[in-house]
Length: 298
Image (cartoon, rainbow, N blue to C red; front, side, top):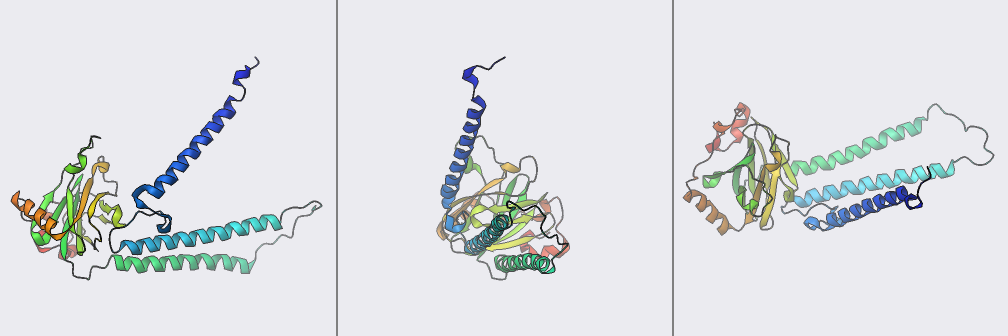
């Protein structure tokens, strides 16, 4: 049965429409990446950091991208050159000379990747050592405890705590005000002592450009120095169960007087003392207990 003229070209039009739609999505995504979170091309489209260590992470990120792009351009250039120079021409009826191996090229292909990985490992290990260094005496110590599916914050030096409950994501405005909120003082060095009540969680504030796992029975630590005030979002970055996506919290970086007022507010609510590790489902390993502040040790 012959097709109607009105249907001729419909598949082609649909294909063009899909391609146009895909192009629009890609364009919008590119615009969003360049605009969302004040990310810029000079920072490798990485979200702007708000701690002293964030600049180091950004440099490592950008350097890795520059190296990757340089290698990609080199490989693509060699590929195009090989295709152009060694393409089959008119009159070429014989196969080119066949070689079983080429020792210099094979050595080159082995040494160069090893060199590249070694350089990347060196800079990563160097920066990681600085970012995870906890030898400097902190101005404040906060024990952050991950639990299904919320957070507890022990303000060790102020002897107060906040115990969070699972977020209720209703889609309505005002949900952020119900989340547990971690308070930090701008310009002060804070040490996070990370523990878990039940399963593996991960403490992540995207603007810190740094995160760390919280493993049952173990104690992990890192320090940050916030460089600007504001409210930032935090979340668990380790799939920890059915309501993992609800495991959210706020971070408020404030001046000293506002921080002191919040500590007093927690004390007035009766949230004095620290929540001990005896609430954990798994005991802290013996060789890890000394890493805990005094009031939290079992």
